[in-house]
Image (cartoon, rainbow, N blue to C red):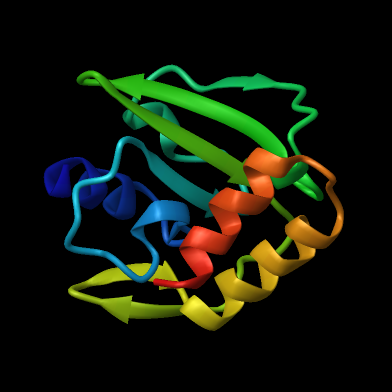
Length: 124
C-alpha cells in the first residue's frame, strides 16, 4: 500500500491523503482516499473514472476512482485542498480539519449508519 501511496504522491504535488488514513497513517486501509485540485498526472496511476455521486461525503467535490493492483483509490476533486501536514513524507489532512469536515457531514444527514461511522472516527 505504501508503494502505491508513493507512486500517487510522486505523480503530482496536490495530493492530500484523507479518510481512514488520517489519524492512523500506519494502519492498512481498505482503500486510499485522496483530495486533489486537478486530475493532471493521475493517468500514470491508471484509468481515471469520474462519476456523479449522491454521497453526503461528496459535498463540494467531483468524484473519481482508479482501481490499481486490487486497491480502490477514491478521488475527491475539489477547488481547494484541506489543511494538511506532512507525516513520513506524505501529505495527510490534519485530524482537526477532518474532524470539522466529518462534523459538517454528520450535521447534514439523517443517515444513522453515517452518523455512527463518524462518531466512531471522532473517538479515535
